[in-house]
Length: 115
Image 1 (cartoon, rainbow, N blue to C red):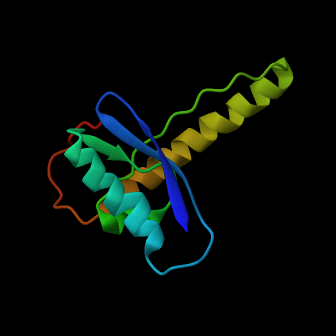
Image 2 (spheres, rainbow, N blue to C red):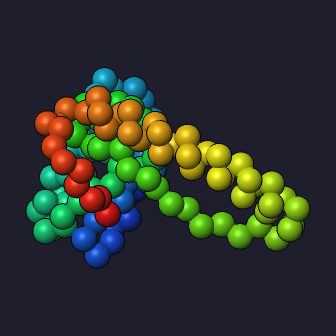
């Protein structure tokens, strides 16, 4: 009926893909978040990284963090255009992370460095 693909790192479970053949209310959260967290804890992992996007993750205890991706673009002009866009996008995403973090479910304390 449904499945999720997670990648296992040294201390982190990385949730990346999921799909279902039929709609069942709350199945996405059960499969992709709650079961992933339960499994990661049982395996002694210290972190579950649920992937990019999705303000709905904040209410479920996931704090927004910057995600990184590595790509190689062969065409120099296209690479320069993408780099220009990414410079602006990185700043906008940083501001969005600050706003979403301030709205999160956790008590606000002094800044804590995240991985």
